[in-house]
View 1: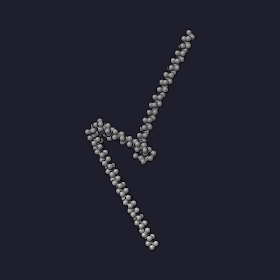
View 2: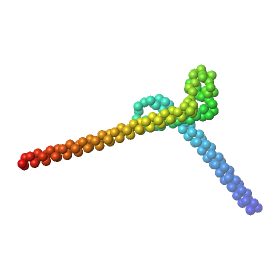
View 3: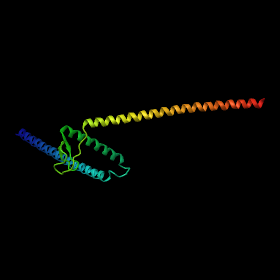
View 4: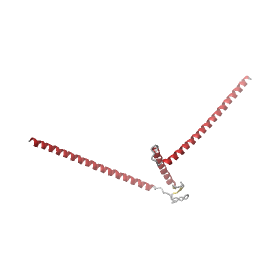
Length: 181
């Protein structure tokens, strides 16, 4: 009987330990989930505060966050461009007033009545890119011509300076010869 009593006590002890460990694991999981939820809530609040601050100060000449403000503006511009490309593929345009997506053929938003801004077609964008490249090439050619002309002028000026120096040297030598005679 003593063997069964010891076995029974061991089983009860092990089951109490297992039950306690299960409770502990459950409590740990609950606490971790609650911590994660509170952290997500805090992050959401921080994001909201940051967005409110950005909206309030994006046009300020404040130096403290100027770099971050410029990075946000650049990211927003890229995001808007990507959304326009997505809209072109889907054949839609987004209303700037209310955000409603409308067919690209529509002239006005059916929700708020605002005139829709049509995105540039790919051919127009390519034409604009070619014009920009042409203008850059023209500016490069112009600056190269100006640099070459300046270089030529500098060479001519150098030659003229050397000729004047030679003339002065010759004149001073003649003057020395005249004084010695």
